[in-house]
Image (cartoon, rainbow, N blue to C red):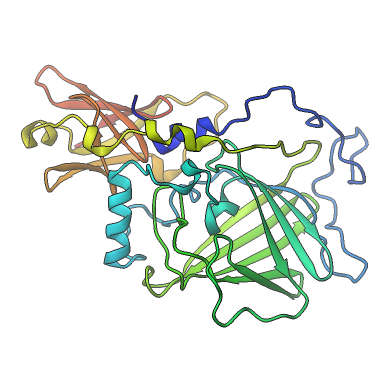
Length: 350
Protein backbone atom coordinates (compact mmCIF):
# COMPACT_ATOMS: atom_id res chain seq x y z
CA UNK A 1 0.00 0.00 0.00
CA UNK A 2 1.37 3.37 -0.97
CA UNK A 3 1.87 5.77 1.92
CA UNK A 4 2.51 9.50 1.69
CA UNK A 5 3.39 12.16 4.22
CA UNK A 6 -0.26 13.12 4.56
CA UNK A 7 -1.33 9.53 5.13
CA UNK A 8 1.47 9.10 7.63
CA UNK A 9 -0.13 11.82 9.75
CA UNK A 10 -3.17 9.60 10.19
CA UNK A 11 -1.06 7.01 12.01
CA UNK A 12 -0.38 9.57 14.68
CA UNK A 13 -3.93 9.87 15.96
CA UNK A 14 -4.40 8.71 19.57
CA UNK A 15 -5.72 5.17 19.82
CA UNK A 16 -7.92 5.75 22.85
CA UNK A 17 -11.11 7.70 22.41
CA UNK A 18 -11.82 7.68 26.15
CA UNK A 19 -9.98 10.89 26.95
CA UNK A 20 -10.49 12.65 30.22
CA UNK A 21 -10.45 16.43 30.60
CA UNK A 22 -11.31 17.32 27.00
CA UNK A 23 -14.51 19.01 28.18
CA UNK A 24 -13.13 20.39 31.44
CA UNK A 25 -13.74 24.13 31.79
CA UNK A 26 -10.43 25.97 31.93
CA UNK A 27 -10.45 27.73 35.32
CA UNK A 28 -9.54 31.36 35.79
CA UNK A 29 -10.01 32.60 32.22
CA UNK A 30 -12.29 35.51 31.24
CA UNK A 31 -15.77 34.51 30.11
CA UNK A 32 -18.78 36.26 28.62
CA UNK A 33 -22.14 36.45 30.33
CA UNK A 34 -23.22 33.16 28.74
CA UNK A 35 -20.15 31.36 30.07
CA UNK A 36 -18.19 31.17 26.82
CA UNK A 37 -14.47 32.01 26.83
CA UNK A 38 -13.91 35.70 26.13
CA UNK A 39 -11.05 35.47 23.66
CA UNK A 40 -10.99 39.22 23.00
CA UNK A 41 -10.47 40.16 26.65
CA UNK A 42 -7.23 42.02 27.46
CA UNK A 43 -4.05 39.96 27.49
CA UNK A 44 -3.05 38.98 31.05
CA UNK A 45 0.18 40.14 32.65
CA UNK A 46 2.56 38.66 35.20
CA UNK A 47 3.24 40.35 38.57
CA UNK A 48 6.35 41.98 37.08
CA UNK A 49 4.26 43.58 34.31
CA UNK A 50 5.32 41.32 31.43
CA UNK A 51 2.71 39.82 29.10
CA UNK A 52 1.71 36.39 30.38
CA UNK A 53 1.92 33.95 27.45
CA UNK A 54 0.84 30.98 29.55
CA UNK A 55 -1.81 28.69 28.15
CA UNK A 56 -2.65 26.16 25.48
CA UNK A 57 -2.07 27.42 21.93
CA UNK A 58 -2.66 26.19 18.38
CA UNK A 59 -1.37 27.78 15.15
CA UNK A 60 -4.06 28.51 12.60
CA UNK A 61 -4.38 26.15 9.66
CA UNK A 62 -1.24 26.43 7.55
CA UNK A 63 0.91 24.56 5.03
CA UNK A 64 4.24 25.63 6.48
CA UNK A 65 4.65 22.57 8.69
CA UNK A 66 4.79 20.61 5.42
CA UNK A 67 6.66 23.18 3.29
CA UNK A 68 8.40 26.24 4.72
CA UNK A 69 8.83 27.77 1.26
CA UNK A 70 6.73 30.94 0.87
CA UNK A 71 6.05 29.82 -2.70
CA UNK A 72 6.53 26.13 -3.59
CA UNK A 73 7.44 27.16 -7.15
CA UNK A 74 10.26 29.37 -5.83
CA UNK A 75 13.38 27.50 -4.77
CA UNK A 76 15.55 30.62 -4.60
CA UNK A 77 15.63 30.46 -0.79
CA UNK A 78 17.65 27.25 -0.83
CA UNK A 79 21.16 26.59 -2.09
CA UNK A 80 21.54 24.10 -4.97
CA UNK A 81 22.95 21.51 -2.57
CA UNK A 82 20.01 21.92 -0.17
CA UNK A 83 17.54 21.75 -3.04
CA UNK A 84 19.15 18.50 -4.19
CA UNK A 85 18.68 17.01 -0.72
CA UNK A 86 15.04 18.11 -0.76
CA UNK A 87 14.46 16.57 -4.20
CA UNK A 88 15.99 13.28 -3.05
CA UNK A 89 13.77 13.15 0.03
CA UNK A 90 10.69 14.08 -1.98
CA UNK A 91 11.43 11.44 -4.63
CA UNK A 92 11.80 8.90 -1.81
CA UNK A 93 8.34 9.85 -0.46
CA UNK A 94 9.87 11.35 2.70
CA UNK A 95 10.32 7.89 4.19
CA UNK A 96 13.17 9.11 6.41
CA UNK A 97 11.15 11.95 7.94
CA UNK A 98 12.18 11.97 11.63
CA UNK A 99 8.58 11.74 12.86
CA UNK A 100 8.20 8.43 11.05
CA UNK A 101 10.97 7.06 13.23
CA UNK A 102 9.75 8.56 16.53
CA UNK A 103 12.46 11.23 16.52
CA UNK A 104 12.01 14.92 17.46
CA UNK A 105 10.66 17.11 14.68
CA UNK A 106 13.13 19.96 15.08
CA UNK A 107 12.58 23.72 14.81
CA UNK A 108 9.49 23.45 12.59
CA UNK A 109 7.46 21.59 15.22
CA UNK A 110 6.01 24.87 16.50
CA UNK A 111 4.20 25.28 13.16
CA UNK A 112 2.59 21.86 13.37
CA UNK A 113 0.20 21.57 16.29
CA UNK A 114 -0.88 22.31 19.83
CA UNK A 115 1.57 23.44 22.49
CA UNK A 116 1.42 24.73 26.04
CA UNK A 117 3.46 27.70 27.25
CA UNK A 118 4.47 27.71 30.93
CA UNK A 119 6.07 30.98 31.97
CA UNK A 120 8.19 32.09 34.89
CA UNK A 121 10.52 35.10 35.21
CA UNK A 122 13.64 33.02 34.49
CA UNK A 123 12.47 30.32 32.08
CA UNK A 124 9.66 29.63 29.61
CA UNK A 125 8.77 26.00 28.88
CA UNK A 126 6.93 24.82 25.78
CA UNK A 127 5.23 21.43 25.85
CA UNK A 128 4.37 20.15 22.36
CA UNK A 129 1.54 17.80 21.44
CA UNK A 130 1.53 17.63 17.64
CA UNK A 131 -0.33 14.31 17.39
CA UNK A 132 -2.22 13.88 14.13
CA UNK A 133 -1.07 17.20 12.72
CA UNK A 134 2.24 16.36 11.17
CA UNK A 135 4.07 15.45 14.36
CA UNK A 136 5.21 12.19 15.78
CA UNK A 137 5.48 12.53 19.55
CA UNK A 138 5.09 14.70 22.62
CA UNK A 139 8.09 16.99 23.02
CA UNK A 140 9.35 19.98 24.97
CA UNK A 141 11.58 23.04 24.80
CA UNK A 142 12.97 25.42 27.41
CA UNK A 143 13.82 29.08 26.86
CA UNK A 144 16.05 30.73 29.46
CA UNK A 145 15.37 34.36 30.44
CA UNK A 146 17.97 34.53 33.19
CA UNK A 147 20.58 36.51 31.26
CA UNK A 148 22.78 33.63 30.13
CA UNK A 149 24.37 33.80 26.69
CA UNK A 150 24.10 31.27 23.90
CA UNK A 151 26.91 28.70 23.91
CA UNK A 152 29.82 29.60 21.65
CA UNK A 153 30.48 26.04 20.47
CA UNK A 154 27.35 24.08 21.35
CA UNK A 155 27.12 20.32 21.30
CA UNK A 156 24.47 19.81 18.58
CA UNK A 157 21.08 18.62 19.83
CA UNK A 158 17.63 18.00 18.36
CA UNK A 159 16.07 20.99 20.16
CA UNK A 160 18.99 23.39 20.21
CA UNK A 161 19.73 25.93 22.95
CA UNK A 162 17.30 28.82 23.47
CA UNK A 163 17.53 32.14 25.27
CA UNK A 164 14.95 34.90 25.30
CA UNK A 165 14.43 38.55 26.11
CA UNK A 166 11.58 41.03 26.00
CA UNK A 167 11.31 43.77 23.41
CA UNK A 168 8.36 45.75 24.75
CA UNK A 169 5.48 43.27 24.90
CA UNK A 170 7.12 40.79 22.51
CA UNK A 171 9.12 37.80 23.70
CA UNK A 172 12.09 37.28 21.35
CA UNK A 173 13.68 33.83 21.40
CA UNK A 174 16.99 32.95 19.75
CA UNK A 175 18.02 29.32 19.26
CA UNK A 176 21.26 27.76 17.97
CA UNK A 177 23.01 24.44 18.33
CA UNK A 178 20.69 22.19 16.31
CA UNK A 179 21.99 18.96 14.89
CA UNK A 180 21.42 18.48 11.16
CA UNK A 181 19.25 15.37 11.49
CA UNK A 182 15.92 17.16 11.81
CA UNK A 183 14.09 18.69 8.85
CA UNK A 184 12.74 22.22 8.51
CA UNK A 185 9.40 20.79 7.36
CA UNK A 186 7.63 17.52 6.68
CA UNK A 187 8.46 17.45 2.99
CA UNK A 188 12.19 17.43 3.47
CA UNK A 189 13.90 20.83 3.34
CA UNK A 190 17.22 20.41 5.16
CA UNK A 191 19.24 22.58 7.48
CA UNK A 192 22.79 22.46 8.79
CA UNK A 193 24.26 22.73 12.27
CA UNK A 194 24.76 26.44 11.59
CA UNK A 195 21.00 27.07 11.64
CA UNK A 196 19.94 30.04 13.77
CA UNK A 197 16.25 30.51 14.59
CA UNK A 198 14.59 33.71 15.82
CA UNK A 199 11.02 33.53 17.16
CA UNK A 200 8.75 36.38 18.23
CA UNK A 201 5.69 35.85 20.45
CA UNK A 202 3.28 38.75 20.85
CA UNK A 203 -0.01 38.18 22.70
CA UNK A 204 -2.52 40.56 21.10
CA UNK A 205 -5.35 39.85 23.54
CA UNK A 206 -6.43 36.94 25.70
CA UNK A 207 -7.17 34.55 22.86
CA UNK A 208 -4.85 35.60 20.05
CA UNK A 209 -1.11 35.71 19.54
CA UNK A 210 1.04 36.86 16.61
CA UNK A 211 3.93 34.50 16.00
CA UNK A 212 6.89 34.96 13.70
CA UNK A 213 9.78 32.59 13.04
CA UNK A 214 12.93 33.26 10.99
CA UNK A 215 15.31 30.55 9.79
CA UNK A 216 18.84 31.68 8.97
CA UNK A 217 21.36 29.10 7.76
CA UNK A 218 24.38 30.11 5.62
CA UNK A 219 24.88 26.51 4.42
CA UNK A 220 21.36 25.75 3.16
CA UNK A 221 19.58 29.11 2.74
CA UNK A 222 20.52 31.92 0.38
CA UNK A 223 18.75 34.44 2.62
CA UNK A 224 16.77 34.40 5.88
CA UNK A 225 13.32 32.82 5.56
CA UNK A 226 10.56 34.34 7.71
CA UNK A 227 7.08 32.95 8.40
CA UNK A 228 4.34 34.89 10.22
CA UNK A 229 1.39 32.99 11.61
CA UNK A 230 -1.61 33.73 13.86
CA UNK A 231 -1.92 31.48 16.90
CA UNK A 232 -5.15 30.92 18.86
CA UNK A 233 -5.73 30.11 22.53
CA UNK A 234 -7.38 26.72 23.11
CA UNK A 235 -9.85 26.94 26.01
CA UNK A 236 -11.78 24.13 27.70
CA UNK A 237 -9.65 21.32 26.33
CA UNK A 238 -6.41 19.52 27.12
CA UNK A 239 -3.47 17.82 25.47
CA UNK A 240 -3.60 14.02 25.28
CA UNK A 241 -0.69 11.74 26.00
CA UNK A 242 0.87 10.23 22.90
CA UNK A 243 3.54 7.56 22.93
CA UNK A 244 5.18 7.20 19.53
CA UNK A 245 5.20 3.66 18.16
CA UNK A 246 5.47 4.67 14.54
CA UNK A 247 8.92 3.15 14.18
CA UNK A 248 7.34 -0.29 13.82
CA UNK A 249 5.49 0.91 10.70
CA UNK A 250 8.51 2.45 8.96
CA UNK A 251 9.33 -0.75 7.07
CA UNK A 252 5.92 -0.59 5.35
CA UNK A 253 6.57 2.79 3.77
CA UNK A 254 6.52 2.73 -0.03
CA UNK A 255 9.76 3.59 -1.80
CA UNK A 256 10.18 5.39 -5.08
CA UNK A 257 11.91 2.33 -6.54
CA UNK A 258 8.67 0.38 -6.05
CA UNK A 259 6.85 2.66 -8.49
CA UNK A 260 5.38 1.55 -11.80
CA UNK A 261 7.70 2.41 -14.69
CA UNK A 262 6.03 4.40 -17.50
CA UNK A 263 7.40 5.55 -20.84
CA UNK A 264 8.18 9.25 -21.49
CA UNK A 265 5.34 9.27 -24.06
CA UNK A 266 2.85 8.10 -21.43
CA UNK A 267 4.10 10.59 -18.87
CA UNK A 268 3.91 13.48 -21.33
CA UNK A 269 0.12 13.27 -21.64
CA UNK A 270 -0.28 14.27 -17.98
CA UNK A 271 1.85 17.43 -18.11
CA UNK A 272 -0.23 20.60 -17.96
CA UNK A 273 -2.03 23.10 -15.73
CA UNK A 274 -5.12 22.07 -13.79
CA UNK A 275 -7.49 24.45 -12.00
CA UNK A 276 -9.63 23.69 -8.96
CA UNK A 277 -13.22 22.72 -9.85
CA UNK A 278 -14.77 21.59 -6.57
CA UNK A 279 -14.78 18.79 -4.04
CA UNK A 280 -14.65 20.66 -0.73
CA UNK A 281 -17.50 20.53 1.83
CA UNK A 282 -19.72 23.66 1.87
CA UNK A 283 -18.49 24.67 5.34
CA UNK A 284 -14.79 24.06 4.63
CA UNK A 285 -12.31 26.95 5.00
CA UNK A 286 -11.50 28.91 1.88
CA UNK A 287 -9.06 27.10 -0.41
CA UNK A 288 -5.58 28.67 -0.09
CA UNK A 289 -4.46 30.39 -3.33
CA UNK A 290 -1.47 28.08 -3.62
CA UNK A 291 -3.87 25.11 -3.95
CA UNK A 292 -6.12 26.70 -6.59
CA UNK A 293 -3.87 25.50 -9.41
CA UNK A 294 -1.82 22.33 -9.84
CA UNK A 295 0.97 22.40 -12.40
CA UNK A 296 2.37 19.10 -13.63
CA UNK A 297 5.62 19.18 -15.61
CA UNK A 298 7.83 16.59 -17.26
CA UNK A 299 11.59 16.90 -16.82
CA UNK A 300 14.36 14.34 -17.09
CA UNK A 301 11.90 11.50 -17.64
CA UNK A 302 9.96 12.25 -14.42
CA UNK A 303 6.71 14.08 -13.67
CA UNK A 304 6.66 16.82 -11.07
CA UNK A 305 3.83 18.51 -9.16
CA UNK A 306 5.44 21.88 -8.65
CA UNK A 307 8.82 20.96 -7.09
CA UNK A 308 7.71 17.51 -5.91
CA UNK A 309 8.62 14.37 -7.91
CA UNK A 310 5.65 12.15 -8.80
CA UNK A 311 5.90 8.36 -8.63
CA UNK A 312 3.48 6.21 -10.63
CA UNK A 313 1.27 3.83 -8.66
CA UNK A 314 -0.54 2.84 -11.84
CA UNK A 315 -0.75 4.28 -15.35
CA UNK A 316 -3.07 7.09 -14.20
CA UNK A 317 -2.35 7.45 -10.46
CA UNK A 318 0.74 9.12 -9.03
CA UNK A 319 2.03 9.59 -5.50
CA UNK A 320 4.29 12.20 -3.93
CA UNK A 321 5.01 13.71 -0.54
CA UNK A 322 2.34 16.31 -1.43
CA UNK A 323 -0.33 13.62 -1.82
CA UNK A 324 -1.91 11.50 -4.56
CA UNK A 325 -3.03 12.62 -8.03
CA UNK A 326 -5.55 10.45 -9.88
CA UNK A 327 -5.86 11.50 -13.53
CA UNK A 328 -8.91 11.09 -15.78
CA UNK A 329 -8.35 10.49 -19.49
CA UNK A 330 -10.54 11.65 -22.37
CA UNK A 331 -11.48 9.59 -25.46
CA UNK A 332 -8.19 10.57 -27.10
CA UNK A 333 -6.21 9.21 -24.16
CA UNK A 334 -5.11 12.64 -22.87
CA UNK A 335 -5.46 13.77 -19.27
CA UNK A 336 -8.50 16.05 -18.98
CA UNK A 337 -8.88 16.25 -15.19
CA UNK A 338 -7.44 15.00 -11.93
CA UNK A 339 -8.51 14.29 -8.36
CA UNK A 340 -6.07 15.23 -5.62
CA UNK A 341 -5.84 14.03 -2.01
CA UNK A 342 -8.95 14.91 -0.03
CA UNK A 343 -11.21 14.57 -3.07
CA UNK A 344 -10.27 17.93 -4.60
CA UNK A 345 -11.29 18.08 -8.28
CA UNK A 346 -9.23 19.88 -10.93
CA UNK A 347 -9.85 20.34 -14.67
CA UNK A 348 -7.13 20.79 -17.25
CA UNK A 349 -6.78 24.29 -18.71
CA UNK A 350 -3.69 23.79 -20.85
